[in-house]
Structures are given as structure tokens and as C-alpha cells.
Picture 1 (tube, rainbow, N blue to C red):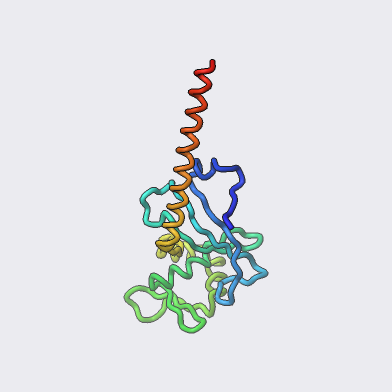
Picture 2 (tube, rainbow, N blue to C red):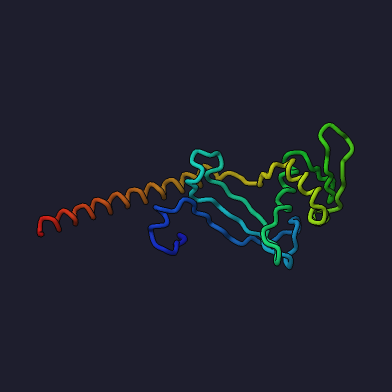
Length: 177
């Protein structure tokens, strides 16, 4: 069933960004518990703010903590693991320094990592600078992108037909006046 945008067809034509947000269930591996916040998934359906960017169409997830807002620290764990800055050893996370075999710091769990970064702002700023503020995202599949582009093509065709119809009505009004 297609999602309906409040405001009619204008949003599809004039919006610079269209996002689809949805609440996802929190898993045991996630850095927050169900009573601490929400896990929000997003899909960027249209992004004309960064035309030609490699992540024009993408999807991802983030966490919102009750009473605190959007969580920056939890998603950085995924980026740290992807870049090799963090290593997983069972439930432990090790913050590795490039070129050294011994970890700079060890965390017993994701929750301890998040709590340590919350309480030590200087440490968080250093870690954040190393991961360069990247957010873990995955690109949409070719099929998903093709579906979005086909939908945009239909909308363009419909807009062209509407413009032609309006032009005909205007010309008829001029003839009768």
C-alpha cells in the first residue's frame, strides 16, 4: 500500500528532501534498552540538496534516548568497528590505536562505551574526530533506486499532462473572453 503524503501532490514536486521514518524494534545487540529510548529507521526517498552525491538515496538507523534526544554516541560504535578503530572481542570493545597491538582502552560492553563517552566529553570529542562524524548508512539496492526513479518519472509525466491541460483551459478562456 503506497504511503500518502499530507499536503497533496505538491510535496512530491517541490520538496527538496523526502524521508520515510519508521520505528524499529530494539534488539539485544543494540546499545540501548527498550525502556531507554527508540530505534528509528530512515530511507531517503528524494534528496535534491546533494545532487550527484554518492549517498543521494540511502537508508540507516539511529537511536533516540528519552529525555536526551538523538544519540550520537551509539551509532559511532558501528563506524568505529567498520574503520578498525574499535575491535570486538566477545562482548568487549577495544579502542585500538593505529600501529599498536595493545588497545588504548577496553570497554566491557556497548553500554559501558556509551556511558564512558557520555561522562568524559574530551574522550568523546577525540573519538568523534577519529571517526570524522560518519554515520553508518547503507545505499539502497539498485531495485529500490529504480523503483524511486520510476515513481519520479510517473510524477513528471503527470505534471506535464497537468500543465498541458491547464494551458488548454487558459487558451479556451482567452478565446471565449
